[in-house]
Image 1 (cartoon, rainbow, N blue to C red):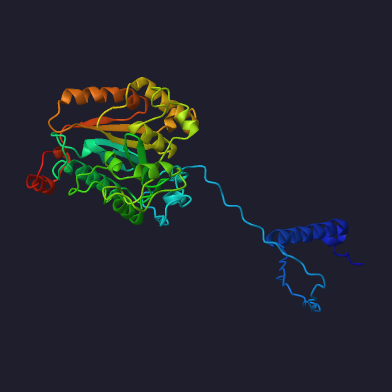
Image 2 (tube, one colour; image 1 turned 30 degrees about the vertical axis):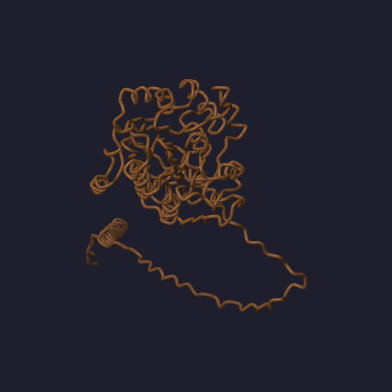
Length: 402
């Protein structure tokens, strides 16, 4: 019997199976390492689909059976805390009418524009009042119009001597015409016992009001007459009595006026509230001359007062006392704050050929008033200083003595 062949795997069957299995696992592991398995997930894009709107039935409007009152709510305007300053301001022009008959209630002063304007804060105009420069937007001019402004050195009146007041009136008209339209102004003429203003209240410096002021004084002390505004009234029978009977401020005289007067006349008198502050000479018992005119100006509540006079000439009234009188009046009108008081500015007209020393003495009497009211003062040594070249040429051909 032949000998059978011996095989390795047959003899080692278990070991061979193990080896095969190991090789297979190694191959599988190698394949697993060489390949990366991944999965791609692709998201679908979201789409929004709108739903169909549900149509609602429309309701018919039904008129209410009971009437309903609808009130519109007013919008409140904002309050400005800061003061506004404007250079170019257009204001509505205000014009007052000259009274046609005497005794008209309110007279020319029916339009009261004396309050409120100063609060707007316009740029203050500067006025050159016969050499005295002062700023203001509520201005009162007081001008002496008695014999001292129309009589020559020979104590007679003539066209040449009356050129003094003609010059004063012409310069005054120019000052008023130069005022901005937003300015308030008034003018008063005075002599010893009377003060007659242009209007009972200050008015806007419109072209119409300026023209009326010029027309009001156009007949005053003409060159060709020898009568004088003031003392000349004594020669017109019954006129002074008529003037004194005119009650201030409810009436004025517009007819049968002397030809050397303004076109209408008031008779300003101090009220008991003003008169009680007078502490002067007992014979007067009231303010006279420029002092009465100043009382009128203070009652207008201006911020600037200009006075043209020929001297202190009020009896024995002491200047310091007069300054205190005006201060008391201002305390009642303006209050205790002296910053609200007006400036009082004085210009004294010296008679041509008169001694300047006397005029300086007169100016010294006004110093207490000027200083108390933060004013300025000056002297016109010769009226020819404020005349134009044309007026000086005309003066040469006039008769009489200046």
